Length: 475
Image (cartoon, rainbow, N blue to C red; front, side):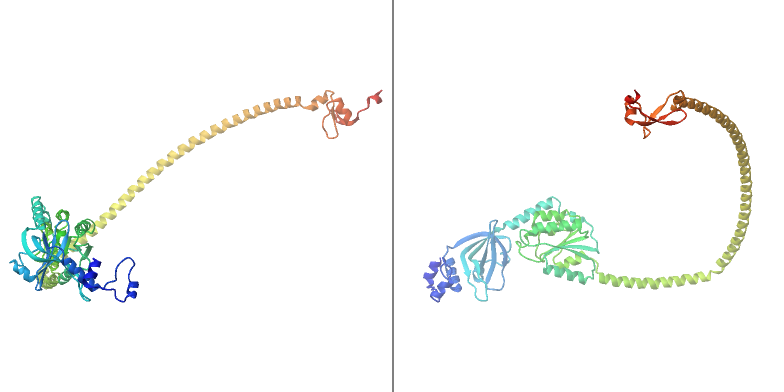
C-alpha cells in the first residue's frame, strides 16, 4: 500500500538525505501524515461496495447532515454514517430507525482523515437502507421478559415492605456519574440526613452485569441497608443491555431488600425495571421513591403539631385545675380524717409492737436460762465422770510403772552379769596376763614379743614392765 500511495500522489521524502536519516531502517518513509491519510481514504473507497445486515444501535438522527448508528451482531460491530439526504430518500421516518431493529445497509468503507483540530474517523458510508425486521436484541429481551414473567419473578419485590423513611440506603451506580449527583440533589431537597452506602460498579460493558449483581448481593447481605437503588443515565438498548442480564434480574428479584430501579430516561425500559420493587424514570424520581417523606415539610408539621399540643395541654391543665379547686374542700376534710385515723393507728401499732417485743425478750430470756442450766448440769456430770476416769487411769499408770521398773531392773541385772562374764578383767583375775607394746596394742605371738623387746605386762592388779630375753641369754 505504501508503494501505491507514493506512486499515486507523488509523495517524496522531504529534506533529501536528512529525511532519510530521520526514518527507521527497513520501513519506507517518513511520509506526511495528511497525505498518507488522504491516500488511505482513497484506497478504502476503492474497496468493493457491499450490503450488510445487523442490528442498529446507538441511532442518532439529529439536525446535522449525517445520520449515525452502529450495526451489530453476535460476532462484531461496525460504525455507520449516512447522509441525511440519502436517509430521507429511503422514505424512513426517524421513529422507524431505532435501537434494536434489524436493517440491511448497502454502501462502502469511508475514512475521514481529520485535521489539526479534528479527530479522524472510520465509518461504513451507507447509501441504501431498508428494515429487515425486529432485531435479535429486542427479540431476546422479549423472550427473557416472558420467561421471567411465567416464573413469577416480577412479583416478589412488589410484595416487600418499604420504609417511608429509611435510615440506611445502598446505591449501585458508576463513580462520579451524573446520576449520582442528581440522586444526592434529590435527597438534599427532601431534607434526608441518613446514611448512604455506595457500591460503585461499571454500568456499561460485559463486566457490568456481574459487578452490579455482586454489589446488590453485598449490600443486601452485609451493609444492613433498608433499600437499594440501582441507577444509570440514558442510552441505547446496547448501552443498557447490562440491565437486561438474566442473572442480574434473578438476583434483584430474589433479594430480600426492596430494590428501586432508575435506569435510563422516560423512554427507556430495561428488564430490571420489571423485577424491581419500584421503577423510576430518573435518579431524582428514585430519590423521591426511596425517601417518601419530605423531611423538611415533616419537620415543619411536627413543630406545628407540637406547638398545638402544648397549647391544648396547657388549656386542659388549667381547666382541670379550676375544677379541682372548686371541689377541693371535701377532699381536704376527708384527707384530714384519714390523717387523724392514720396517726391513731400508728400509735396503737407502736404500743403493740413494744409489748410484743418485751414479751418475746422475756420468753427468750427464760428459754436461754433453762438451756444454760441444763448444759451446766450436763457439764458437771461429765466433769465428775472424767475425774473418776482420770483417777482410775492414774492408778493403772502407777501399777504399770512399778511393774515396768521391776522388769527393767531384772533385765539390767541379767545384762550386767552377762557383761561381767565377758569383761577381760575377770579373765585377768583368774591368773591370765596381757602383753601390750608401747602403743598399747596387744602382743599375741612370741615372735611379736621378741620383736617388741620391751613391753608391758597387764595383770589383774595393774601393769608391770617386762623385757623379752634372747634365747642365748636364757641358757
